[in-house]
Image 1: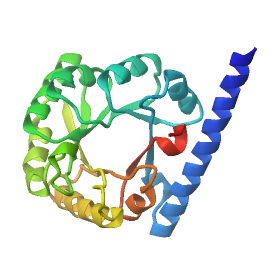
Image 2 (image 1 turned 90 degrees about the vertical axis):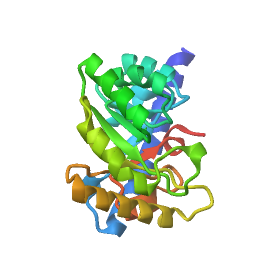
Image 3 (image 1 turned 90 degrees about the horizontal axis):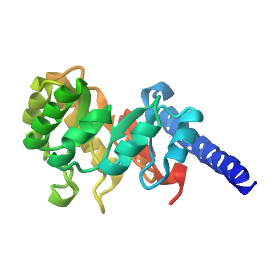
Image 4 (image 1 turned 180 degrees about the vertical axis):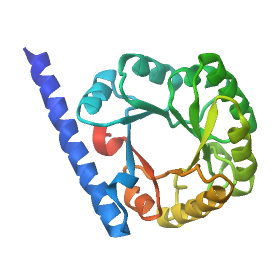
Length: 230
């Protein structure tokens, strides 16, 4: 019946989109003189059904991302065998829930959140990778710690039980050239690695600006629209 055909079609659509994004990442790596293996694709499945997340997993995507706890928790229960990334702004009261299923939390930007995630991870008997979100324009609405606050926040994460400092994450500010923004992030990341050599993750770049992110040294790109659709 219809359902089967629709399922096949969606798989083909996702496979084609994934192939396009893969070509873009490979070309960007090549242009930057980097190995393709240095960049991890995190497919952002927010607002899309768990069936899409499962199809992407079956198509070889190893890392999936969500930005709302309720939706993410449900999908993580249903779709196993992948690394789940929580990429949204995280309210402190949701930290304990997120700590139960997320492998990586991308937007750690304040002390209270470090404390809450740590407590949640310890309760769940897990170790989460935490990325310090860097604000590149100081806009409080979009989250992130200003570069001057990153070192102390990173130290807190490193000392917190149940957390491992993975590195940094940023969103290119509106109206700023992504190349300029991601170059600034690369500087913050390099300074952090002097103190914390294991903090090698640089999460940057989305569907519209992944090339600029790869050029600036991103290790993880977060792509939703270009794979799943608008």
